[in-house]
Every structure is written in structure tokens, then in C-alpha cells.
Length: 471
Ligand code: IFM
Figure 1 (cartoon, helix red, strand yellow):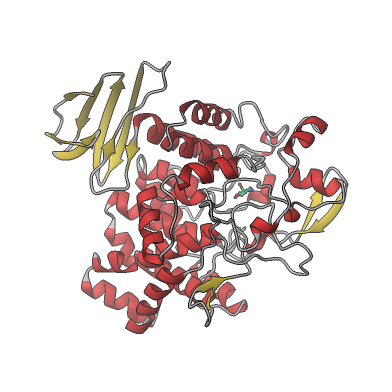
Figure 2: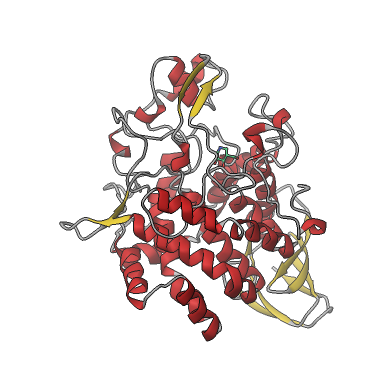
């Protein structure tokens, strides 16, 4: 799919750019899109995942320099970067509808570093490659933790930590209405992912060889006190929630104006770039509840709901039982899918919530993104590698019910009504599985003795011996 991410090129110092090598859009830059791409490689070609993570490792010093320049500690990876790892995000942006250049604050998408920490964790969970973690991953992971901890500031009155001067994944919101500078406070996605990341430090370091753990803590000069402080930040980050249980995209989002979606749909043929349409009318998306892509909901794309519930519990955050449904309804109704990365996320969430028709529609739209050039002309500038890779992963998670978040691989198939069969292979913790799923059966062969769960039932497999399980 992407020449830079090939099993033949794992020694080359290259990563996957947002448009692969298929076109010149985004000037060949690398964003956070690996988050959507790595899961595919983890379960098929883990040596490629490792090579993509090593690309980041080789730019760790640049990320440290970038953090320092902005008054932070640790490693702050750039939102858009190229070969030398420095920030290359544009600072002005052309609106083709008006021909005007406007300010661009998107470099404030500091969540790119969270994506890297998340990718390290997922890679290690999926492959058991602790050697990579001990030699490279831990150093990056801990320095990213240090960066976010240095960004979190405690409010002495509430005892809560806040993180400001950020943007979430939704690129329509760069600043507060009337603000002179870009940046938002307490983006829920970032804060929850920070809590998740800091909360995983103990689990990760406890699995390291003692000498390796000591070495990395010494190299980064992380005292025990600092680790305790990270734990405290994780439990006390500020998350804003409405009375109905809607997680506020960022502090202040609920005060924004509602958009008359119907009127815009009637007025314009295509409203996916609502930011540009609004600007052409002398307005700004910053003033409205309108999202380019999943933001708060990204949390549930990355983490299982139970895991997020655990984080909220530790923070003392109360939410109604059906809060995920409510949040999906709320944000989906306010999203224009201006990014190709949007539909696939919503498709996965709708599937988790058993909204099969909605999920299938969104999944199909995501699948056709480049085939049908849904953005009306952007495919010619290069395919959208993030969504393309993610549709492969989401097919397995949605329809085969592949879950790699637990100790053993779990499968809970739910084929779309019109599918008769699904056949695929996957790698998990060094064991290669081959599945054939029909409406009532799952056939499995693994190349090692192993255990997995099918619809919650533990199945023990003998190497190379096919088992047929009735479902
Ligand atoms: O990384 C994405 C971002 O989330 C939305 N705009 C395009 C970028 C590159 O694919």
C-alpha cells in the first residue's frame, strides 16, 4: 500500500506520510495518522510497525528541543514534520473559496505525541516485543509523559489539573471566539488520553527487566517523586461534563452557537468543509458547535469503554449509564466529516453501540473515500493513507469482532446481514491465526499452541490443527 512502509524497507529511515507516496498534498508531511495505520501493521507486519516507531525514536532529540523552545519538559513531537523532525506546520492557510489567506494554528495539535505513546503501547501489547520497549519505546513514552505533565497546571482552588494551549483532533476549533491567540483549554480527548498514558506507566515499567528500567529512569533522570506526581495528575485532570452526560469537547465548547445544519445543507451542495463555507460568509467555525472530525469520540476509538470508565472512576467523574450513546448522537449530529479520518471512527462507535445500519453506512462511505474521491478532488493529490489502513482494521473489529485489548485474542463475530463468509489471518503476540467466519461457525488454525476467546468462551488450540467452533 505504501512504499515507505514495506517489509523490504524496514531499515530505511522513512515513515508513512498522510498521502503515502501517491501525491503531493500536505507536502509529504507526517501527522498523527500512524494511529490509524499501525494497528494493521501490528497484526500483519509488526516489523514495519517497529520501523515506523523507530522513525520517531530517531527524532526524539528534535522533539525534546521543540518542547524546550516552548517552555516544556520532555518530548513534544511536531504536528507536521518531515525528514529532520522539526515542526513544519504551515502558519497561514488558503481558503480556496475566498482566495484569502488566514491564520493557521493547527500546530497546537499536541495530541500527536499522545498518538505516539499510544502506538508504542499497542505495538508492545500486540507483539510482546519488550526488547524494543526497553531499548527505545520506554524512553520515548516516558519523555512524552514528562512533556504532558509539564503542560498540566494545578488549580489551587479546585485541586484539578488543566491543560491549555492545545487543539483537539477537530481542526475546526483553533481558538476561543474573540481570542487573540490560538489554543483551547482542557480538550477532553487529550486530557483523557493523558490520564490513560500516565496511568499506564507503572504497568509498563513493571514489565521491564529491572536493569533496563533503572537505566531508562537514570538516563532521563526521573525521580520516584516525579512518577508519583504523574499518578496524581492522571487522577485529577479536569474533564467538563454537562448535566445530561455530554463530555464537553473542551472547556467552553458548550457556550458556542448551534449551527442551522438544515439551512446549510439546502444552501450548499457539499458542506464537508464547513470552516471554509463559514469563512466565506464572514463567520468562523470557532464560534459554532461544528466539528471536522471525531474529537471527544476519538477516545472511544482508541480505548475500550470499560477502560475509559475506569479512568473516569479514578477521577470521580459521574456519567449516566448510556453516556456513550448520548455522546455519539450529540457529536455525530454536529460533525461535517471534513476529514477522511472521521467516518471510520464513527462507524466503529456505532458498531459498538449496535447501531448496525448507521455503522455500515459510515463504514461504506469511509471505504469509498478514495475510490469515489468523496472530498471532490483531493484523491488526485494522494490517497488518504490513514482511512485506507483503518478500514482494514475496522472491518476486523466491527464484523469479525476482533479485540486485541486483552491478554488473549478475542473474537465475537457479527457479520453484516448480506455477508456469507469472512476469511482473514492475523498475528497476535507472535502467534499466527487464520480464521474463516460464517454465520454459525468459526474455523481457526494457529501456527502455535495457543488460547483465545470466541464470544467470551475460552478455546485452546493445538498448533496447525483446525478447530471448528459453533457460534
Ligand atoms: O492528520 C490529519 C488530520 O487529522 C486531519 N487533516 C488531515 C491530516 C492529515 O491526514
